[in-house]
Image (cartoon, rainbow, N blue to C red; front, side, top):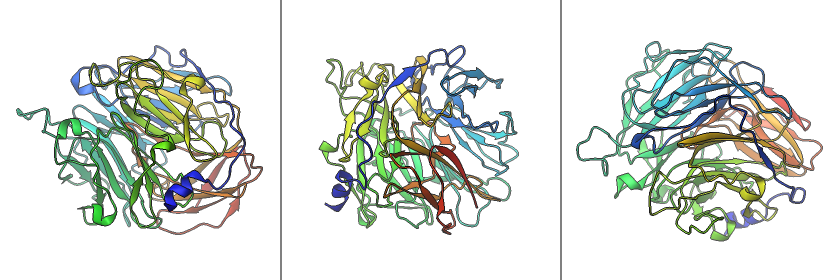
Length: 500
């Protein structure tokens, strides 16, 4: 199979395996933070990562569940992670949040998902926010929201927002078989009109607008939790242009899992993004084919991570947030998965360590969380890989259910790196939907810029590339409207802003 051959023979080997090591920094978050609450907060617990004061150090907005959400301002320096708790209105019931410059004014806004009314917080600069629901015509409803993604449709100045709603708590027949209705918010003037229902809905826990081809409008992937839809549901793919659900005839396999999170990254070097879906039990990686279809990754690729890899609990693991990132800058993307039992689910492992799967030169992934020091057995939920102190290495943040959030500083040895930000005038300032192509050490890599996915949280900021032994690199961008930039030299070990 061509796709598998590409996975197992990457375009460049990069340096030998570098030691991967993280250091916990429990004092990084003053006063700590935990995601608490009962049944409606068994899921969620996301973290939004974004720079809201222009100092090139990303802030952290953490969902609190029954506890208040918190915004932590980044005060880190190279070699030292530290944050300050910001003044923020008391907002409870928060399941997750996603950063997005909705009005393209240069200040990141926040889409706050809740067990209750969802809230759009307008960024006013210097990490100040104000409620924008009424000003922007946004109907936050009062559902149990657990998934989000955004894209800019052609000709629109404002983004289209998709929000996934979990179980309908008001249905007396529930909770099983009573999935609530997902909503699509399309722009209307300087804001939004009435939302449109996306039916059928099957209790989603993650959504992602992504271009599964190389030059098509983004489709909406939806990962659903079969624990509640019970029958008839599946992992969905929606064509946005006509709101048609795609299936096997269009290359989208009909798969039913306990879907928790989505991660997307081109792993094979063909420019097409692979799809990683977390679940209870197997974590499913689908390899993209040129015809628009997908093949399930072979078991020996090492990505299924279906049971705890330490301890003696052989019951299935429970995966939540998944995120690709090159943690040792060897030029190969690795994979972090936050793990943890829903609460006291007896069918699944209770001591369930997070995964850090390192990609080797042959394309296979090997477990290293225990060696790297990030194999926490707290009930992980949301997470993020981000360079918190500006040293060119991806640090780690994990939000836990009923346990303190964890921050880890990356101390790994490794190669060169590059952090790439995009900017364009007018709408869609951060170029959501763009594609970055990078060439270094004879290898070409492709990165799609998206908003959404993960489990209840995501990032807005530079795209991080590990470059291995490369001493130089060059870049070009396919902007969201399809226009390509020229190739330009970028250098290595630096931050780059590509302005249109």
